Length: 253
Image 1 (cartoon, rainbow, N blue to C red):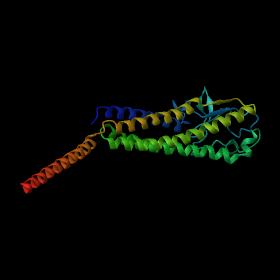
Image 2: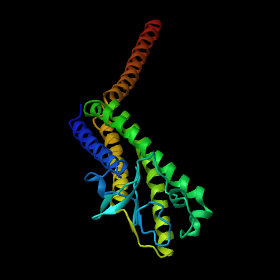
Image 3: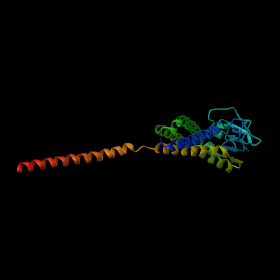
Image 4: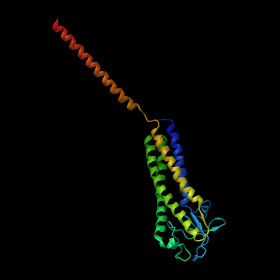
């Protein structure tokens, strides 16, 4: 076993576990406990929009919509499964909202909801990979299996991060153009893409760990055997030629 494999496996496992921590921080955003109360995707004021009991400014987190208290998530609404970013649906009104939210309501609804689902799928593959990653310390098969599941996590996370970035940036622009005070949730965005980066690095390290120390003895044996057969054939041929020569000589004598 190559000495480099356990080191690469350990580094890959650390990056993989770090990405899982980032993912959990994002998925648990909306809880009013530290540090989750610092994480949100988008914040905006609701000037001219009937609040209907909603706080202003308001924040979209993974678990629920929250107000702002001392710069942190607070006065949050009840937790629901994957609350969509769909202001018309969220607030139950079109008054005071940018036209894009009422004209393309389904677009905003499904853009965020599908993204939330991919967060969970990516996390599932990452958790499976981190369990298999322990095998990567000592076996090539474990390294390749871990890299496969980590690669799936990377793909799912790429979709989740892309969809999230799309609705956050476009939603920010729409609210800003309507005169609202809007801000990005930098930590949620950074943690999402950091998980993607960490899992990408882990995938590469797992693959390299599986490749290093690969034994070439089999290949060398095949080559040696081939040459040996060739040498053996030539030897047998030379022996036959010598025998034939002696018989011809005997006949002439």
